[in-house]
Image (cartoon, rainbow, N blue to C red):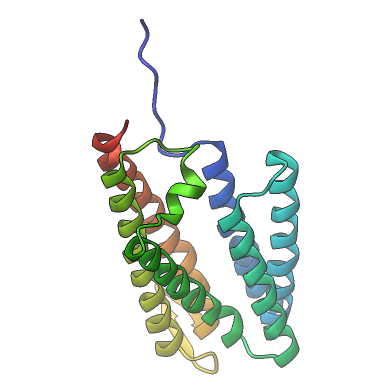
Length: 201
């Protein structure tokens, strides 16, 4: 019997990752060329496209990416209305912190919300689901804190020289999301998925 190959991400998880970071890549490029307003428009429009793509591919879009995308659109719109990039930046902090709190609350109430959503994708024991959820909750706390460190530490009205490139605070924040948070998220998810294999049913 041939051995079934296991990969870190299935099709749905891959689309979820692309829907989160694809718009950010486009924002990075457009912001560098045309400024934050155009970059925010690119973020909003590409997020809408990602939502439509998820609905088309899965008929029913995954709930968490749909919520995250909707929040992105709202905070992106606030940035366009006010002209302040703080809104699109702080969205990450607010969403990740609230999401972590939601997951911790579920564990405290013995209602594992991750299990309800992902039980068709992953098959873990009860202890495995609790470990999986708690690990991601702490990861969301960490990314929320790191987001605030970068957002507050790098001002939009100042120029910083990073690896030979002149960037303002928004540029640094977008680069941080793309070149640090994205690979860190992928590595963390891959390692956690490997580690969770001992909890498979």
